[in-house]
Length: 333
Image (cartoon, rainbow, N blue to C red; front, top):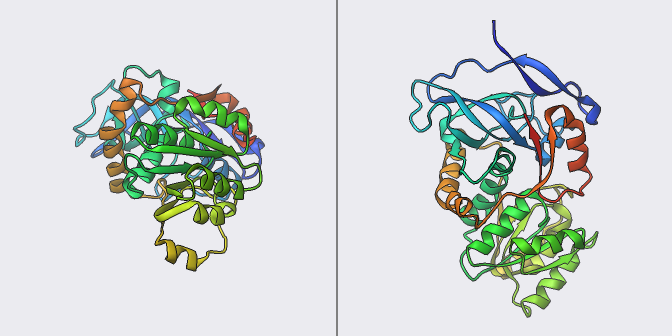
């Protein structure tokens, strides 16, 4: 008989009342290169909200009723082909789902060691935000020293990671948010200039024109979606790169092909959750090489909005849905 564990369980799709904490079967002993991790903390993401509502099912092979894309914990057991991690080691990582539970089973290639200067709550804030931001900005977008980057939703988990990584790489960092308060708080993380767009994305393009004296930005990291497309194209410089990472304002918009062609723009879409294990492993290794040293030195750091116990998962979802959070919402397990 399988051992049991506590987990967040989507009993029904819709509002937070569909979330429960249940006893469910624990993952079986790890085979091959898989690793069983005793989860100590995990962080919420917009994907969890969408999955709860029934709009974003987990990829094949991941639990459909247990959300959670990132976690931090201790290695409980390792499969016979695992070589990189050892029992008792502090690790964090990403997964297609199932992280909001006492245990999660993942390939060892998607794990990285937790720096000693991070506690469990801080560690849980890192994987999805920093791997997503680093992969989008540098691997996909080719951001380099001295370039200008515009980060939308700069007060979100991924947004704050992007601001910090861009600043650490020597880029000039601009940001937007719907509230001026979040942008003021983001300044301590490396934001050079910012504008509160409220419900007018065109304000971002106008601000970029002023900040850059008409030159535009080299990279736009768009975590918001459709409503910002026109402003993004206007804000970009010749040869600029537009990275789509989120669609909270919608997934469809009219595209001005002429402007894209005249400016010789590159439009890049990226998502982490549905990638293959090999692709996630590559993103994790790049994160481990380039971002982990910055975390160890305190040059970039996770930003916690609020911490909840597992049983308070409904409150945690409500907090993230309110759009008032600054940084990551964490569940302690």
